[in-house]
Amino acid sequence: MKKLVIAGGTGFLGRACVDYFKSNYDRIVVLTRNTPSTINNITYAQWDAKTLGEWSRHLHDCHTLINLTGRSVDCRYTETNKKAILNSRTDSTLVLGKAVAKAKIPPKIWLNSSTATIYRHSLDTKMDEHSGEIGTGFSVDVAKAWEDTFFSQETPSTRKIALRTSIVLGKNGGALTPIKHLAKIGFGGKQGPGNQKFSWIHIDDFVRSVKFIIDSPKIEGPVNLVAPKPTTNAQLMETVRKVVGIPFGIPLPKPLLAIGARIIQTETELVLKSRNVVPSKLIEYGFKFQYGSLPDALEAS
Image (cartoon, rainbow, N blue to C red; front, side, top):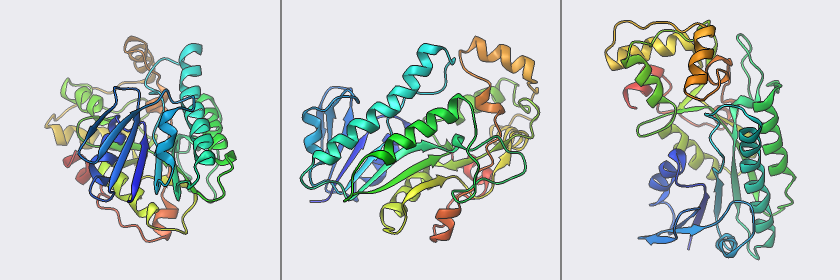
């Protein structure tokens, strides 16, 4: 019986993975803080994402482990929130490593979330897995600690991949919903200078690329999950306006963004950092994107 375990499988990406993979595996186990239940071939098992427990038995003879656990970064970076963001990622990764090591028959492959934000702010140089330059600052420190925790786990029988994922576009969640809302109420102009790069991937290509990695035994280490052509913030907002049918959009310069971020309890870094990231490994191994065009991706989201 082929089994998939997804930690953090009730969020936007997790729900998409469950829906996509439910016909590819005989059984799916979702590790969640919610009440345990079973629906068809999907079992929801309770865990706290930091301590070993009864849930760890599900990793025995599990073909694939996907860890998507992590507190949302869409918040103010107070010391309390920063600690929660970091710990939610490193604690879950650490305890999963212990469970993998404990399993008599460990998973064949472990895919652990990471982020394309690990690369430095870049307007001109494309960042890939081979020569991309790691950045500085809180978000990068979190990403580095996350990956260091992941790759330091001693799991010799398990192939490991860090999914350096960009902004995921899709229906019913993710970053696109608030962006569309801004455009609909007239604030669909560029944010900040507008030239900052925006790396993205459609949710369908996200789950397809995860399956491609699982089915490609030579792929390991960090992999960028991004569409081939980053756009700019100005181009993003212009395309969003066209999709929602709003012909104009008031731009939001940095001072207004700072005020707005405080009001809605988030950080301007989420829109001002230039993420100029490309998927070299996926392309080298032959992955074909269904949505390589931003307009097509937004129309389908």
